[in-house]
Image (cartoon, rainbow, N blue to C red; front, side):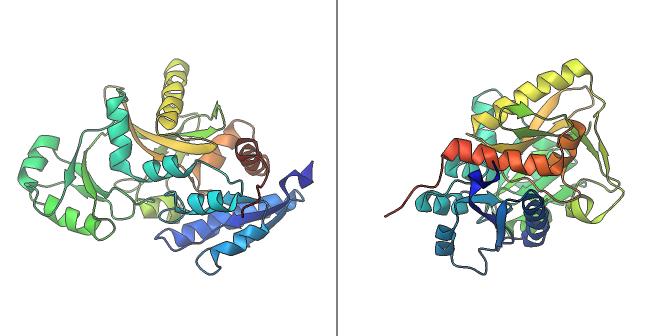
Amino acid sequence: MINQFGKVAVLLGGKSGEREVSLKSGSAVLAALQAQGIQAEAFDPAVRPLHDLEKYDAAFISLHGRFGEDGSIQGALEFFGIPYTGSGVMASAIGMDKWRTKLIWSALGISTPAYEVVDADSDFSAIEKKLGLPLFVKPANEGSSIGISKVKSVGELKAAYEIAAKSDPLVIAEQFVGGGEYTVGIVGDRVLPIVRIVPANDFYDFEAKYLRDDTQYLCPCGLSKEQEAQIQLEALAAFRAIGGSGWGRVDFLMDEAGKHYFLEVNTSPGMTDHSLVPMAAKAAGVSFGDLVKEILSLAIKHHGVKTLVG
């Protein structure tokens, strides 16, 4: 029944470095919900006060990055008693933090690339030697490859750290794993087909994700059925390990020997025409419209109907 959702706020835009991507994601979600007769409206928390959310019965979060994917907006929605899509406050906060995600995975024996936390006083030369070159340097709390650098030559780590530190004071240097980049979409308890990402440039950066048309997305991904099924199970476990729920995406890398390493969790994946979860859903026979409706249905199922506050 269409009216089961009531009035839905599609949260989009926001004030993170991923605002423009979020506007595209949210616009696509909004159009898909409205096309199915659902009473949905755009809500940009960068321009509207959060207490306006009290006018809505449910929220579809299409915000990316800080203040939208890190538990902040989830906490506000919890306070107002409004059901929302995706993971809760804790899982959203952990998933946004690549370092703390790695700490949990490492404690549970879930494979992830070797890394070091870097700061201004680090022995950059020693870290380069320990992790080997090339290596990646990234802000721990950013998405869409913002602030990421690939260090290829000795002595470049310090400059890469300074770039990353402009986006976040917590910076990690990460071992390069060069056998391919993949992603696993999760909707409820269902794991979608794995997508392999083949960028035309040096790595899957912001430009490759959103601006170029020559990035290749392979689904089927080229892995054997047995290996894909095993990684799908492990990806779901990695998602659940940080408390992930509703829907999300787990990225992983493969080395040349065929061993996989989980990279990070995305608790509010993109929903643009370049985005990976809609692509995987389509390969599984699920239309974009059905996908967004299922994600919204999971929010109602998980959180229940809107509760009164005060």
